[in-house]
Length: 288
Ligand SMILES: C[S@@+](CC[C@H](N)C(=O)[O-])C[C@H]1O[C@@H](n2cnc3c(N)ncnc32)[C@H](O)[C@@H]1O
Image (cartoon, rainbow, N blue to C red):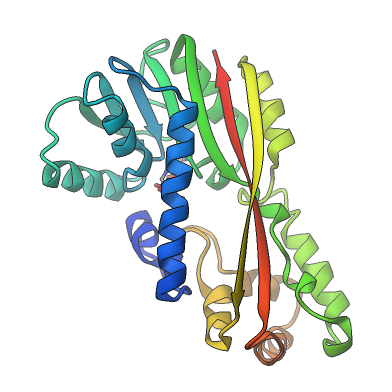
């Protein structure tokens, strides 16, 4: 586990926003709510449903699902990590929710629920943290009732804008090296964050027995002026509690001194410039 982030709750509540200014934080939160609404809308939730939120974190989807079914039915907030469920229990208590909600500590690849026991599975940004995604997707199929629905969102990080796409080779003597390193990092099949895309997920859903699979890719573009002070946090913030920050990944492929020189050049070059970052994501809906 990273030294910078002790647990998932801390990462969800603060670390993932640590490199953003206030305006960017507000935009990120709005974006999260939009994603939540789209995942829940595609799940076609209705009163009486039993809904499982896999990898609930701080309950973004789960509490939204509870509202969508009007508290009539059951929402199971599940996560592999206890700290997330402690946080969700606190939120439930503060919101005076006492019925129709359950908490389940379970790994997505080994869900402690009976087969055919759930009407709907919802999930956001969880497979991206699991090395072998197919066993988890098979698990979702096992616990869903016949005709049950699944609606998920996963970021396709391997297709995000790369740093080498933001710089001019004439200003960076190490341009080709940086390009090679970024291409290696973003195609590393041993890194759960990048070892998949919408096509491999689609194949996994078919293998797991799902039908009526609908995959929509949506690309979020954010344009802003770079403050040089953002660049160190970009490279030093862990992408999850159990994965190394980007700088550490670079150091696996090039000497640290060269990485530091690149970062200094990047600050001078990008500082004050307007950049656009593209981040594609997949919304997947399927039925058992
Ligand atoms: C990026 S967070 C997303 C949290 C939440 N779904 C949301 O949208 O805010 C990833 C979540 O997946 C959980 N997680 C990671 N690996 C998991 C696994 N193997 N099984 C179940 N949950 C897992 C983490 O604890 C964390 O809560």
